Every structure is written in C-alpha cells, then in structure tokens.
Length: 315
Image (cartoon, rainbow, N blue to C red):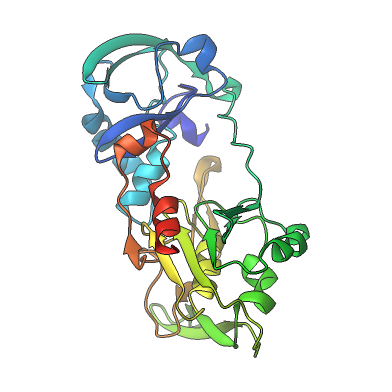
C-alpha cells in the first residue's frame, strides 16, 4: 500500500494555487494540450463533481501534515484533485462567466510534470540590481556573478525554492562584514523526557571591510523550507537586510525517521532551530519584515508581486 492511495491513484496534469479558499489554475502541464483542453491559467475552479472547493479542502485537511496552515494548503495543491475516478466534472469561472467541463484523469505514474521555466541562476535587473535564484545558483556561478555585480546598488536573493548549494557560505566573503552567530540548535537532554539543551551555535562571516555595501533583500514564501530557512537566517545577520514575502514553511532542522507497521513510516525534526535570542522558527517560520499578500489576479497576469515589491524598494 502506498500513501497516495489515501486520495486515489489518478490525478490531473495541471498545477493549481490555493488562494483565499480558491483553487486557481497556475500552470498547464504537458498533458494539458491533450486531456485538459478548455482550461487556462487564471481560471478559478469552484466545484469538483458537484462538491465546492472549500468543502474538498476541509475534507482533506486532516490528512495533510504541515507546520502551519499556509503550508498545509501548499501541500494540498498537489493532491486536491487526486481521485480513483476516470474523470472529473470541473466547474470554473473565467472573466466572470461560469463554465463546466469534464476532464479525464491520468495515473499518477504517467503524469508528465509541469515544465520548469528556463531561467538563469542569476541576472542583472534594471542595470543596477543583482538577482539570484537559490534553486539554481551553484558554486560555479559565483565568479561570473561577482564580476557582473561591479558598481551595482542592490542584491535580491530569491529563496522561494529549495537551494541547490550552500549560498550563505558561497557569499561569505562578499556579503558579511563580520562574524556573527545566526542560529542556535537544541536537542533532547539524554533520556530526560521533555528536557532540552542548547547543543550548538552556528556563525557566518569574518571581519571584512570590503563587503558589499549595497542593499540586500531576501524573498521568501511558504515554499521556503528547511535548508532554505537556515540560509535565510544567515543572510538576516547582514545589517540593513530585509526579508519580504510571506512566512516560510517553519520546517527547519534534521529529519528523524520512525518506522511504522505495514511498511509505513513517519518523520519529525529531531533538533530545535532558533535565532540567537531563542525566537522560534519551527512552526511560525521566518516572519518577513514586509508581508506581501498573494493575489489571485497575479496568477492570471503572470505578475510576481513579491519580486516587484523588492525591486521597488531598491529604487
């Protein structure tokens, strides 16, 4: 038995975002041209097989483990339409007009993923702002990036995806002007139940008078998780750095696996992750300095409100 059998072995090929209780078509996959004709990015799905979306969300919520509600909805986007049925009747709204279509479902193992956008690991915006995608930036990119940053006024670090490298270490000699502790870790005190000790502290940077003098902005949302959260905490030690977007996943720390009967298993974070002043990160996540609400119209218009807000702050 597999975990996905809880919801069914079939699904649809398009991607949705859940915004304010609405399921909005966010991207069309490779299968959309063949099986899901009639849907467009920005369509608001209100019912599935006659069941309102909000009711479908409520019925599945008890089966979604997550650090907070925002993250639970993010996880639910992947299985909200999972089913054992061969097709789904979907009611949706486009430009104020309500429509109904029947969409065939596909086996989970045969669904082709939504193609990723072919974007570079870094680029220069408006000839004066460096922009780095944590999900693509690797060690080999550091030298050409630093060359491109000569005389630039600002830097945007986009952590709305999982990092592929240790960016806080790659940028250690460029962004940090002094050594500072950015995280404290706790673990259980031996066999004493409910008792914990501060096990370790982690610092970043060294004395460096040649650090980058421009403004630094870090982008986060509910997709910022684990190693991404850890690295963001390091960049928050930069004087004047601002974090904008939405609260991160609140799921930093190691993974401790627990085997269960019948081949199942579960996991939890076996260490606590705190700021140096012992503020919590697990659960509430990293709280942005400037909160940017998600707006449904932005999906239809392909408008990145968080990124644009950062660019405006660097004017």
